Image (cartoon, rainbow, N blue to C red; front, side, top):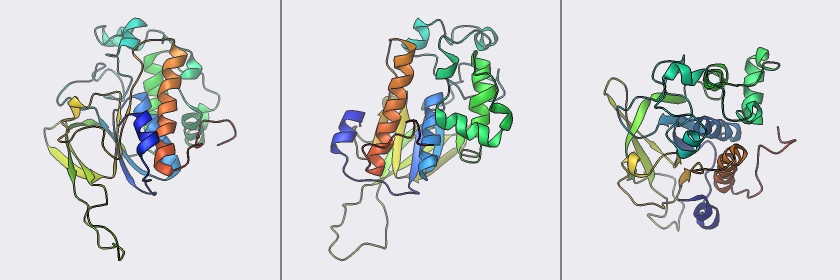
Length: 262
């Protein structure tokens, strides 16, 4: 479901602590998980769905599997690509303003857990972004144990919801099915769990191995623009994040990034 479709046609909301699976351990995926956790949702983040594919940065950082998707056109146009040597790429200056790398929510979470981050310089390289911000962000109370970069989604199925709390007069089958998210870890072991909502971040539907067609209720996509100024790239991804959670909470004006909302 695209954002325009979701915001117009999705009338059901997801009560907290509804279970949300986010596919994509990119900065946007991690920040979207943080956004959901601030709202009280039970969020888990998994790697995007190309099994056994190594992350472009490999194990060159303290947090392998976490970082931006360097295969997108925007990064290529700005001089970053997974074709480069990982070490030189990690230490090259980012093609964006340091202030764009982290949202107010991320800064708030980091500073509350790691006081030394309050006056720390903002990231200027990929290494600083990953090792000094995104990795520690995954270790904060809200996200600890919820980001799984070694578990890659390989299949998504719809499964009926079994419930014993139907009210008299309820129409059978009106509860949307759950998403059964099947993942494969680095040891080749398979894991599968049901989730009430699926958010695919900067990844194609085809790569997820979905056994159903899109759009689907409670299935969302957050996509980066293929080109454009860096400010528009960050703004687009964060606007889509706010729209997804505004739809899920049934609050069209909800925007945790607005000044004064923290």
